[in-house]
Length: 110
View 1: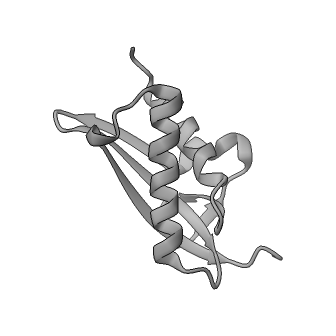
View 2: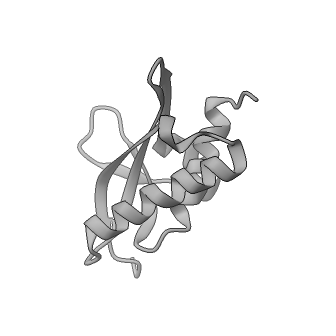
View 3: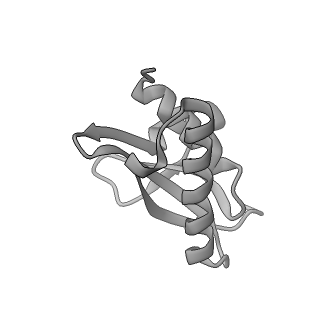
C-alpha cells in the first residue's frame, strides 16, 4: 500500500491536534520571525513529510499551551502520531522518525 505525503501530513496533523497541550499547528512565515496558527483545514502546512532509504520522516511544527511540561507533551505527541499513522496508514513505526518543532507557546484563552 502506498500513501501520499499529503495524506500522511493530514493524518499526522489531526493526530497532533488531539494531544493535550497542543494548541495548534504552526506555519513559518517567509522572511519573518513569527509563526501563524493554522486553521483546522490547513493543518498539513505545519507538517513536513519526507522519505528516503532509511524510512519516513515527519516533522511537526506545533504551538504548545503555555505552562505545560514540554517534554511530556512532546513524548505523548510523538507516540500518538506514530500510533495513528500505524493504525490508519499502516506505516511501520520502526521506519518512522518524528521530529517535533515547538514554534510558539500560547495561552488557550487567547
